[in-house]
Image 1 (cartoon, rainbow, N blue to C red):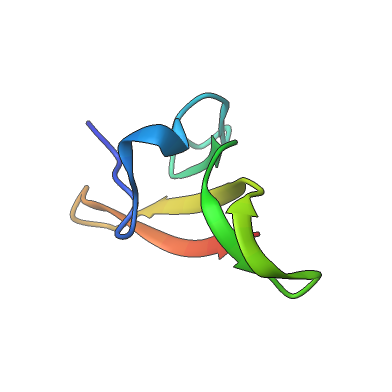
Image 2: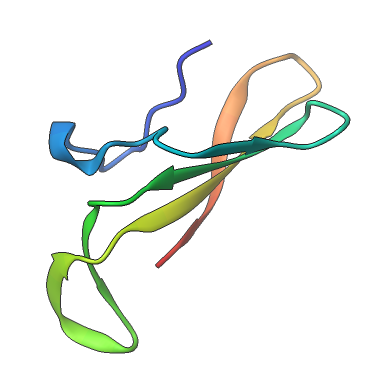
Length: 68
């Protein structure tokens, strides 16, 4: 299974760090060079992000949240 960020770019390095829940139904995936603005820094930069992906009952995966 390949997880993709809806707004991802090649230089984000999504997947550089990954943590999977014990049940295998949730994955927290890091993108250390995600070019994003955060509430703490209004100018976009390679600040990084983490994305929470959840597995649905039908087995498909989707992004539930982005942490910046």
